[in-house]
Image (cartoon, rainbow, N blue to C red; front, side, top):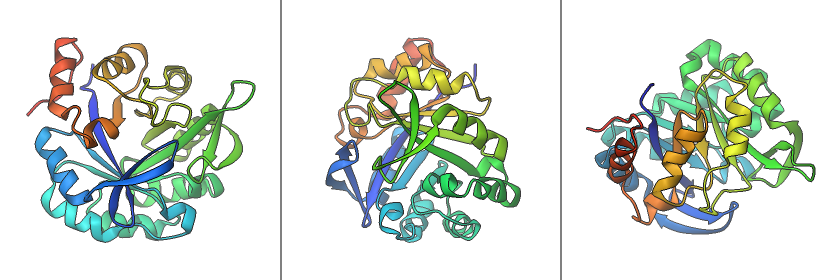
Length: 253
Protein backbone atom coordinates (compact mmCIF):
# COMPACT_ATOMS: atom_id res chain seq x y z
CA UNK A 1 0.00 0.00 0.00
CA UNK A 2 1.28 3.47 -0.86
CA UNK A 3 1.89 5.87 2.01
CA UNK A 4 -1.22 7.85 2.90
CA UNK A 5 -0.85 11.62 2.79
CA UNK A 6 -1.86 14.14 5.43
CA UNK A 7 -2.62 17.55 3.95
CA UNK A 8 -3.38 20.67 5.97
CA UNK A 9 -5.70 23.03 4.15
CA UNK A 10 -5.43 26.77 4.43
CA UNK A 11 -8.59 28.61 3.39
CA UNK A 12 -7.44 32.10 2.47
CA UNK A 13 -9.45 35.28 2.14
CA UNK A 14 -7.86 38.67 1.49
CA UNK A 15 -4.43 37.20 2.22
CA UNK A 16 -5.40 35.80 5.65
CA UNK A 17 -6.12 32.23 6.71
CA UNK A 18 -9.78 31.90 7.72
CA UNK A 19 -12.09 29.17 8.97
CA UNK A 20 -15.86 28.79 9.01
CA UNK A 21 -18.56 26.12 9.16
CA UNK A 22 -20.32 25.15 5.93
CA UNK A 23 -18.39 28.02 4.31
CA UNK A 24 -20.12 30.60 6.52
CA UNK A 25 -19.33 32.28 9.85
CA UNK A 26 -15.83 33.02 8.57
CA UNK A 27 -13.14 34.29 10.95
CA UNK A 28 -9.42 34.99 10.55
CA UNK A 29 -6.99 32.53 12.16
CA UNK A 30 -3.52 33.41 10.85
CA UNK A 31 -0.97 34.31 8.19
CA UNK A 32 -0.81 31.79 5.32
CA UNK A 33 2.96 31.84 4.88
CA UNK A 34 3.64 31.39 8.61
CA UNK A 35 1.04 28.61 8.83
CA UNK A 36 2.56 26.83 5.84
CA UNK A 37 6.06 27.02 7.34
CA UNK A 38 4.76 25.52 10.61
CA UNK A 39 3.01 22.68 8.76
CA UNK A 40 6.11 21.96 6.70
CA UNK A 41 8.12 21.58 9.92
CA UNK A 42 5.46 19.29 11.40
CA UNK A 43 5.81 16.88 8.47
CA UNK A 44 2.92 17.76 6.15
CA UNK A 45 3.06 15.75 2.92
CA UNK A 46 1.55 18.64 0.98
CA UNK A 47 -0.11 21.96 1.70
CA UNK A 48 -3.32 23.14 0.10
CA UNK A 49 -4.24 26.82 -0.32
CA UNK A 50 -7.83 27.56 -1.28
CA UNK A 51 -8.77 31.18 -1.93
CA UNK A 52 -12.36 30.85 -0.78
CA UNK A 53 -13.51 34.23 -2.06
CA UNK A 54 -11.78 34.32 -5.42
CA UNK A 55 -14.39 32.34 -7.32
CA UNK A 56 -17.41 33.94 -5.69
CA UNK A 57 -16.24 37.52 -6.05
CA UNK A 58 -14.42 37.06 -9.31
CA UNK A 59 -11.01 37.89 -7.88
CA UNK A 60 -7.77 36.36 -9.11
CA UNK A 61 -5.78 34.01 -6.92
CA UNK A 62 -3.08 35.01 -4.55
CA UNK A 63 0.08 34.49 -6.57
CA UNK A 64 2.03 36.65 -4.15
CA UNK A 65 1.18 34.45 -1.16
CA UNK A 66 2.21 31.42 -3.21
CA UNK A 67 5.54 33.00 -4.17
CA UNK A 68 6.40 33.84 -0.56
CA UNK A 69 5.40 30.36 0.59
CA UNK A 70 7.31 28.54 -2.16
CA UNK A 71 10.49 30.37 -1.12
CA UNK A 72 10.29 28.88 2.37
CA UNK A 73 8.31 25.65 2.10
CA UNK A 74 9.54 22.60 0.23
CA UNK A 75 6.61 20.20 0.20
CA UNK A 76 4.19 20.24 -2.75
CA UNK A 77 1.75 23.15 -2.84
CA UNK A 78 -1.74 22.85 -4.30
CA UNK A 79 -3.53 26.11 -4.99
CA UNK A 80 -7.13 26.73 -5.96
CA UNK A 81 -9.67 29.52 -6.08
CA UNK A 82 -10.53 31.74 -9.03
CA UNK A 83 -8.71 29.58 -11.57
CA UNK A 84 -10.60 29.93 -14.83
CA UNK A 85 -8.09 29.63 -17.69
CA UNK A 86 -4.88 27.91 -18.78
CA UNK A 87 -3.19 31.28 -18.24
CA UNK A 88 -4.33 31.24 -14.58
CA UNK A 89 -2.75 27.78 -14.26
CA UNK A 90 0.47 29.12 -15.73
CA UNK A 91 0.57 32.09 -13.37
CA UNK A 92 0.10 29.97 -10.24
CA UNK A 93 2.53 27.26 -11.34
CA UNK A 94 5.14 29.92 -12.15
CA UNK A 95 4.60 31.43 -8.71
CA UNK A 96 5.71 28.12 -7.20
CA UNK A 97 2.66 25.86 -6.94
CA UNK A 98 3.02 22.20 -7.87
CA UNK A 99 -0.65 21.56 -8.54
CA UNK A 100 -3.66 23.71 -9.35
CA UNK A 101 -7.19 22.88 -8.21
CA UNK A 102 -10.18 23.84 -10.35
CA UNK A 103 -13.78 23.74 -9.24
CA UNK A 104 -16.43 26.17 -10.55
CA UNK A 105 -14.56 26.97 -13.76
CA UNK A 106 -14.26 23.28 -14.68
CA UNK A 107 -17.99 22.76 -14.10
CA UNK A 108 -18.74 25.66 -16.45
CA UNK A 109 -16.03 24.69 -18.96
CA UNK A 110 -14.96 21.03 -18.61
CA UNK A 111 -12.48 21.45 -21.47
CA UNK A 112 -10.34 23.53 -19.08
CA UNK A 113 -9.26 20.29 -17.38
CA UNK A 114 -8.30 18.74 -20.71
CA UNK A 115 -6.46 21.85 -21.92
CA UNK A 116 -4.50 22.26 -18.67
CA UNK A 117 -3.58 18.56 -18.57
CA UNK A 118 -2.32 18.73 -22.16
CA UNK A 119 -0.19 21.81 -21.47
CA UNK A 120 1.14 21.08 -17.96
CA UNK A 121 0.50 17.36 -17.43
CA UNK A 122 -2.22 15.59 -15.45
CA UNK A 123 -0.03 15.62 -12.32
CA UNK A 124 -0.63 19.40 -12.08
CA UNK A 125 -4.42 19.25 -12.41
CA UNK A 126 -6.62 18.66 -9.38
CA UNK A 127 -10.38 18.48 -9.84
CA UNK A 128 -11.88 20.00 -6.69
CA UNK A 129 -15.43 18.72 -6.22
CA UNK A 130 -17.78 20.03 -3.54
CA UNK A 131 -20.64 17.57 -3.08
CA UNK A 132 -23.90 17.75 -1.16
CA UNK A 133 -26.78 15.32 -0.78
CA UNK A 134 -30.07 16.29 -2.37
CA UNK A 135 -33.48 15.47 -0.89
CA UNK A 136 -33.28 11.96 -2.38
CA UNK A 137 -29.83 11.31 -0.91
CA UNK A 138 -28.01 11.55 -4.25
CA UNK A 139 -24.69 13.42 -4.29
CA UNK A 140 -24.82 16.67 -6.25
CA UNK A 141 -21.99 18.97 -7.29
CA UNK A 142 -22.30 22.43 -5.75
CA UNK A 143 -20.22 25.52 -6.53
CA UNK A 144 -19.63 29.01 -5.17
CA UNK A 145 -18.98 27.80 -1.64
CA UNK A 146 -22.02 25.54 -1.70
CA UNK A 147 -24.38 28.33 -2.66
CA UNK A 148 -25.27 26.97 -6.10
CA UNK A 149 -26.43 23.44 -6.98
CA UNK A 150 -25.21 22.57 -10.48
CA UNK A 151 -27.55 19.60 -10.87
CA UNK A 152 -24.54 17.44 -11.78
CA UNK A 153 -24.21 14.00 -10.21
CA UNK A 154 -20.98 14.10 -8.17
CA UNK A 155 -19.89 10.53 -8.95
CA UNK A 156 -20.45 10.96 -12.69
CA UNK A 157 -18.64 14.30 -12.62
CA UNK A 158 -15.65 12.72 -10.85
CA UNK A 159 -15.45 10.07 -13.59
CA UNK A 160 -15.66 12.77 -16.25
CA UNK A 161 -12.87 14.78 -14.59
CA UNK A 162 -10.66 11.69 -14.72
CA UNK A 163 -11.53 11.11 -18.38
CA UNK A 164 -10.67 14.73 -19.21
CA UNK A 165 -7.22 14.38 -17.67
CA UNK A 166 -7.35 15.39 -14.00
CA UNK A 167 -4.61 13.65 -12.03
CA UNK A 168 -6.33 13.82 -8.66
CA UNK A 169 -9.69 14.61 -7.05
CA UNK A 170 -10.10 16.80 -3.98
CA UNK A 171 -13.49 15.70 -2.69
CA UNK A 172 -15.19 17.88 -0.09
CA UNK A 173 -18.49 16.93 1.52
CA UNK A 174 -20.50 20.06 2.17
CA UNK A 175 -22.70 17.98 4.48
CA UNK A 176 -19.84 17.31 6.90
CA UNK A 177 -17.55 20.32 6.29
CA UNK A 178 -16.75 22.06 9.58
CA UNK A 179 -18.84 19.66 11.68
CA UNK A 180 -15.86 17.65 12.98
CA UNK A 181 -17.98 14.49 13.18
CA UNK A 182 -15.89 12.52 10.67
CA UNK A 183 -15.34 12.35 6.94
CA UNK A 184 -18.26 11.51 4.63
CA UNK A 185 -17.47 7.83 4.15
CA UNK A 186 -20.48 7.16 1.93
CA UNK A 187 -19.53 9.92 -0.49
CA UNK A 188 -15.90 8.84 -0.54
CA UNK A 189 -16.74 5.21 -1.23
CA UNK A 190 -19.14 6.22 -4.00
CA UNK A 191 -16.42 8.20 -5.78
CA UNK A 192 -13.36 6.04 -4.95
CA UNK A 193 -15.21 3.03 -6.34
CA UNK A 194 -15.59 4.69 -9.73
CA UNK A 195 -12.24 6.39 -10.38
CA UNK A 196 -8.65 5.14 -10.51
CA UNK A 197 -6.90 8.46 -9.79
CA UNK A 198 -6.09 9.47 -6.19
CA UNK A 199 -8.89 10.94 -4.08
CA UNK A 200 -8.25 13.39 -1.23
CA UNK A 201 -10.87 13.22 1.53
CA UNK A 202 -12.01 16.61 2.80
CA UNK A 203 -14.66 17.89 5.18
CA UNK A 204 -15.53 16.77 8.69
CA UNK A 205 -12.33 15.62 10.37
CA UNK A 206 -12.50 16.24 14.13
CA UNK A 207 -10.23 13.76 15.92
CA UNK A 208 -7.42 11.25 15.45
CA UNK A 209 -9.74 8.31 14.89
CA UNK A 210 -11.29 10.01 11.87
CA UNK A 211 -7.97 9.75 10.04
CA UNK A 212 -7.62 6.01 10.57
CA UNK A 213 -11.31 5.49 9.80
CA UNK A 214 -11.12 7.23 6.42
CA UNK A 215 -8.12 5.14 5.36
CA UNK A 216 -9.45 1.85 6.71
CA UNK A 217 -13.02 2.24 5.44
CA UNK A 218 -12.59 4.04 2.10
CA UNK A 219 -10.17 4.09 -0.80
CA UNK A 220 -9.02 7.64 -0.05
CA UNK A 221 -5.34 8.25 -0.75
CA UNK A 222 -5.01 11.36 1.40
CA UNK A 223 -6.86 13.18 4.16
CA UNK A 224 -7.19 16.93 4.36
CA UNK A 225 -7.98 18.85 7.53
CA UNK A 226 -8.01 22.47 8.65
CA UNK A 227 -9.47 23.31 12.08
CA UNK A 228 -7.65 20.56 13.94
CA UNK A 229 -4.30 21.86 12.79
CA UNK A 230 -5.13 25.58 12.83
CA UNK A 231 -6.16 25.51 16.46
CA UNK A 232 -3.22 23.26 17.41
CA UNK A 233 -5.45 20.52 18.77
CA UNK A 234 -3.25 18.08 16.88
CA UNK A 235 0.03 18.31 15.02
CA UNK A 236 0.59 16.52 11.74
CA UNK A 237 3.31 14.40 13.33
CA UNK A 238 0.90 13.30 16.09
CA UNK A 239 -1.54 12.16 13.39
CA UNK A 240 1.19 10.25 11.58
CA UNK A 241 2.47 8.65 14.76
CA UNK A 242 -1.08 7.48 15.54
CA UNK A 243 -1.58 6.14 12.01
CA UNK A 244 1.70 4.21 12.20
CA UNK A 245 0.49 2.54 15.38
CA UNK A 246 -2.69 1.62 13.52
CA UNK A 247 -0.54 0.02 10.80
CA UNK A 248 -1.48 2.60 8.20
CA UNK A 249 1.56 3.53 6.06
CA UNK A 250 2.65 7.17 6.27
CA UNK A 251 5.86 9.10 5.61
CA UNK A 252 7.61 10.47 8.68
CA UNK A 253 10.74 12.59 8.41
